[in-house]
Image 1 (spheres, rainbow, N blue to C red):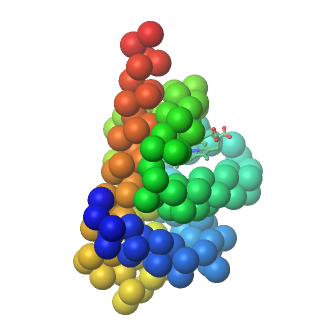
Image 2 (image 1 turned 90 degrees about the horizontal axis):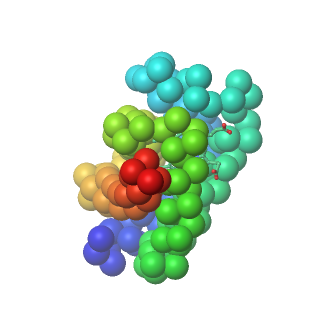
Length: 139
Ligand code: HEM
């Protein structure tokens, strides 16, 4: 990721932060509509899950310019997701729902450059998580 992309992600995430609850609602509605099969992996009551997702995203975004510092946390997260029943292909579905949600939340501020910066961000996080998960699966 370029420094400009990191700036775009931080700036746009700050714009979404005040509507984090609605964004999380939109995100999971979209995810469960596009991939109903993953709904059973999650608890019935999604309130806690929504908070955890937004917190983790906030941590990742805040540390984008020093990703190496959060690598171990992301690898742990990826390994825990194996136990949650997450498969590699789910990451694309989740990524699509995330990008769509950002588009909804940001409106006109969701320019092609902002979108590309988020695709890179999600791709980076997902790649680290999937690589750590694959090592568990092989062990
Ligand atoms: C960048 C990608 C992702 C991030 C940042 C993320 C973040 C999180 C966080 C922070 C938790 C809370 C529990 C913990 O810390 O271990 C969690 C739980 C969970 N995630 Fe993810 N996740 C991602 C991708 C996915 C994908 C692709 C799936 C597949 C459907 C998924 C399904 C789940 C499930 C089922 C739980 C456990 C719910 C429960 O039983 O409480 N996540 N995720």
